[in-house]
Amino acid sequence: MKMANSTMKTSFVAVILAGVLAGIAMAQCGNTCSPDQCCSRFGFCGTGSDYCGVNCRGGPCVNNGISIADIVTPEFFNGILNQAASTCVGRNFYSRGVFLDALGSFTQFARTGSVEESRREIAAFFAHASHETGRFCHIEEDGGASKDYCDERRTEYPCNPSKGYYGRGPLQLTWNYNYGQAGSDIGFNGLDAPETVANDPLISFKAAIWFWMNNVASVMNQGFGATIRAINGDLECDGKDTPKVESRVNLFTEYCSQLGVAPGDNLRC
Image (cartoon, rainbow, N blue to C red; front, side, top):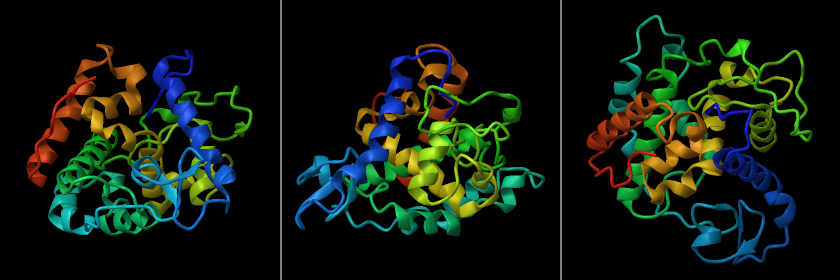
C-alpha cells in the first residue's frame, strides 16, 4: 500500500481521511453509546448496518457467525505459503495459526453479509497479501529502506528520523501516519519501532487486518477493483500499472475458485 506522497489525489485523501476518522472513533463514542447502540469506525453511535455491520468497532456488532478457520483451512493457507521458495524469510514468519489469532481483535473481518460475501472477502485479502509479499515470501518491501515514506504534513504522527516507514507485513504497511495509527489501535510503538511489523508475526497480521478494516472492507461491495484502488490506486489504477492490477486480479480469481465462490463484477480499477 504505497500511496503516492507527492500529490493529493482522491484515493490518497480517502486513505488519510479514513485513518483520521478511525483514530478519533473511540474518542467520539467513548462510553456514550447506549447498550443497544454500536460505535462505528467514524465515531458515532447508532443502530442498523451502517453502525453495526462492517464499520462496527464497539457495542453489539452484528456478524454472520461463520468460522473463518473452516474457510482458511491449512490446505488453503499452506497452499499459498508453500509456493514461496524455501529460502524466503516469510516461510518461517507467516502462519495460519497466527493469522487466526490476529482475527481475535477484528470480529467483523469477513463476517458481514452472506457466506458467499465472506468467502469473497477472504479471497480478496489473501490475493492482495500474496501479491504484496510474493505469496508470503517477503516480510519487507524490496528496496524500501531507501525510500522516503514520511509525510511531514501529518504532524500528529511525527516521523522518527532514524526510522523508515516502508512496507512491512502481509499488506506492506507504509507511511508514518499508518504506522502511527495502527500502533495506537493495536498496541505497538508504530512511530519509534515500525520494525515491529517485520519482527512480530502477530503484530504483522494485525497491522494488515487493521488496514483492511479501516480502508478496504467497506468497498468490497463495489467489486475487487475497488479494493485495488483503496490499497494502491494512485500507482496502479487507471492504466498506471496494468501488469500489477492483473496480478492481483489473477490471484483473486484463483482464490475465489479454491473457496468455491464467484469473483463477481468490477474486477479491475
